[in-house]
Length: 225
Image (cartoon, rainbow, N blue to C red; front, side, top):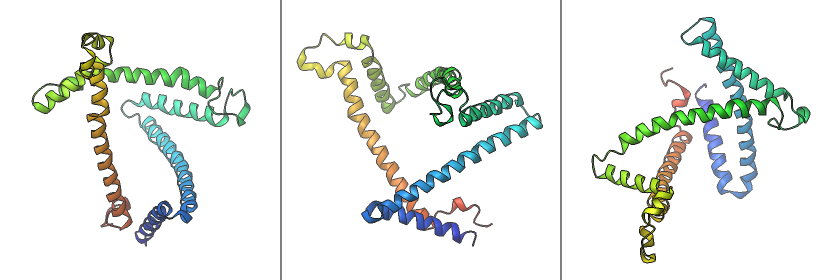
């Protein structure tokens, strides 16, 4: 029964959501189930937070490698959690928005989280530059096309790129670097994005059918159990 019940729930909910999309009278029922999923997601947040504390407290107790970082992680998590739950310093009391101006939560986000996020993005720029150097080396025809397209798009985003081809006559305006960059982004790039999205959509449909039909059972654990 421990396998039949989850399979039945998966088939029932999957078919119900499909019918709610294609059969108008069942639309409200599908919306109600979507609300249930949101409620389940809230409990998932509790489980995630509890697991975060469990992992780092265990690491602290056993003095594992890099355990001082666990102090910062657990302390930061608890501080933001308390600031958000009790809305400390919130000018509108506990009934106001959690990120109201002047609250401790907003201050932590503005003065700690945002600068740390900017720092991470700044560090990632060096990794992106390194990866771009390796990817854009013209080893073959495809890499050469990628290199040329990337170079045009980069130049098209700068005043220097506009200046390079500003002398072209109006009849050749399509050859101006900014216009070439726009064409690359709106035609070949968009076509590639749509092809990827179609492939992703087909993959989602096929996986959903495998789950509903009971072919895919990896979420149940080991079949031999």
